[in-house]
Length: 112
Length: 113
Image (cartoon, rainbow over all chains, first blue to last red):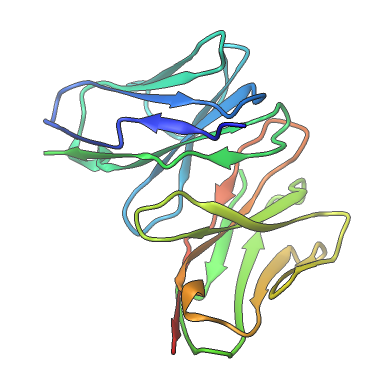
């Protein structure tokens, strides 16, 4: 059984640029959730994907968008990067209903 | 929406002492309360969880208690060891429905030898 894998592990971008982060869900999991964890804070929910559709969203602007693919992997896209977007981005996969919630190791994004 | 408060923000104990971290949630519909341990630069790791139909759960040195009436839940670590040093997060969610974890602000636990 493979766990949740995220790529890249680290990324440095310039303000105004766009970024794509990737997540492969754990084998058998069909739901992917994305979280943003700023330094010294708890993870904040961005959105969740199930059956390739966004089925819930936290308090994040539309420049945060995502995709889920037929193999349940997912992407998080952030447009027009701002300095405050610097954070650890965590992906979590689970079964529908939230069973077996498992986090990946995250992508550390730095916006300069 | 759900809001989770966590205290204390930092906790320093001597090796062998007990540590208690407390959380309060606001949404009475929440029925699942996991605790995560996060070491520096690493992913949150689930250490124990409890569902609302249970008042207490124990796993070796770790236990969690839940008071649904007061909307409180707590993590208890006994016989602490230096390797217990990390940031601990509580969270709340609704299992079986739309699954969104709402996290507390974290407790930095330092266990001194």
